View 1: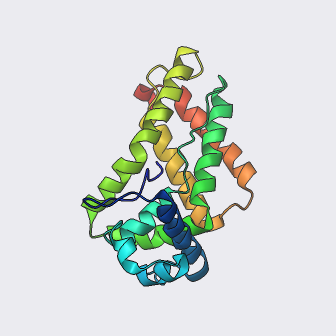
View 2: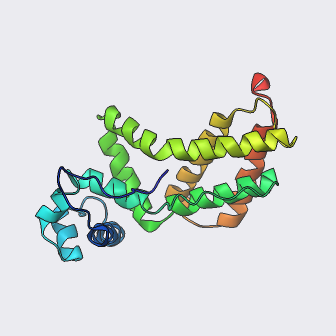
Length: 202
């Protein structure tokens, strides 16, 4: 995932990072307090103390706004490698679970996934926008671990990512942060098992 390095811009719109942050914060607050369906552009404008046209100049609609509000929960601060593969994968698992279990994300994700059902192109754009930087950082971590003899040279980085994302997302939506540390440790062990197994044997 990646933080929205600014909301979506329209031609000639001057940047106002403070207003962007104000609107994103209001969106997150409404998602938590009122839920996805009630988080409308008008409601966000009231909460943020701005007019709706200010929002529409920056985002084409509610879904784009909610996407940015949820992505803003991830600051793009990927864990710094320590040289210990299990410790590193545990840090990644904690990060993924924390972001997915944020109350705003837990409120938004089911609604967004429902809307993506009939709009695969938008879903793919979101994945490309959010996934690629994270997948690349994880791939670099695993390459370094392989060079140090802690992972298989041909370990399947995509499989590690899919397990990490899927396991933490489902856990976040169903249990939130309940027993988060114990769960993260178990998932980290599973990720290590995948990382040390050659792709040819998977």
